[in-house]
Length: 412
Image (cartoon, rainbow, N blue to C red; front, side):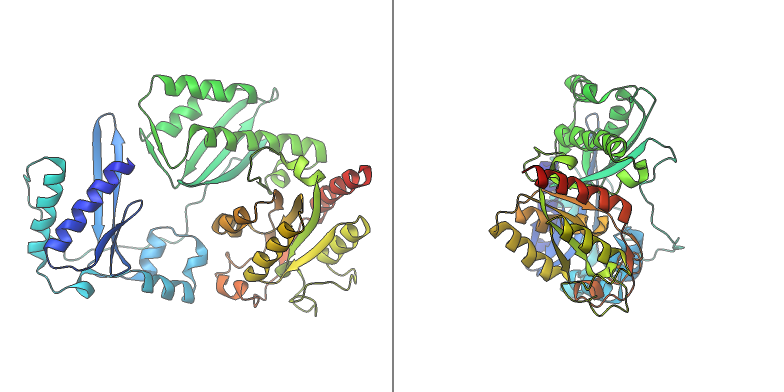
């Protein structure tokens, strides 16, 4: 699929250039740019031996409506986010005064040449579109069950999401796989979900291998190993829930960042030497909210974590903003920190997984609850350290994780 995307995008670029558009180029995996701004995209789907391609070039843009229609993350829907998106995109009319009828013919000619096909039908340009925006974003939902575990895994091909429910014998009674990724055939994830029904953790790799052996399949930018890795993480959540005596929902708040893929959550916790907490979990009235430190007055969960971790020999740092996080991670790397425990919302981790990966330190991250900058559309304020709402830390879960680190350090 990556090859077809590139070939189709290059055909579109050639069609644009032939019609007088300048500085047009293909940006992997599927975007068309003109003068360093996004002018459109091409998408492909594959079923059996049939390729279905769909392309979009922008004639005009309503940025706010477009971002909502495309279900982009909420953090991009702030005033600053919408303005930034507007600087990222461009339109045909801004790039050239070329005749659109000629452009249509040029595009059809170059795409047909690339595919070694004839152009059979000339379709008219659509001059107007009526729409009724529908609010809300479709989320990856999980059923309500005592042993339902969900999570995600960032890959170079996109973010994979998974959810599963275990029966009394710890076998999969239901599973769901999704993500902003390219796969073929289009129902590949449904096939995987089906063959995994009734599987134990030790059986999922072999069942997936058997399925793919007789199937023409493709995963663009990720592998079957990533899918099984995600579900091993979900099985791990069950063990975490049992070991720490917490609910499945609490176990779902764990995010394992392991660059080498060799450690599980409890191993990382056991070797942790530092704890990172977000400033947004401190009370808005606290004079320490935007400072790295804590008076340990006992009036908030962050103070309790400082007290608990401090008494057990773990260094605690309040992350004041994104730049401070990058600086802190670099410092931990220089100090040869084995592992660390952190707290942040999953939206932040997904968006900035590359920053955690660059630090190259295993981490066990706990999702925070309550008001966060992504839900309140105040991402820019949060990055600069000016977010005023308060997030919440599950103190009971955090204390149990910190205690694991203390027990291990005491043994050393």
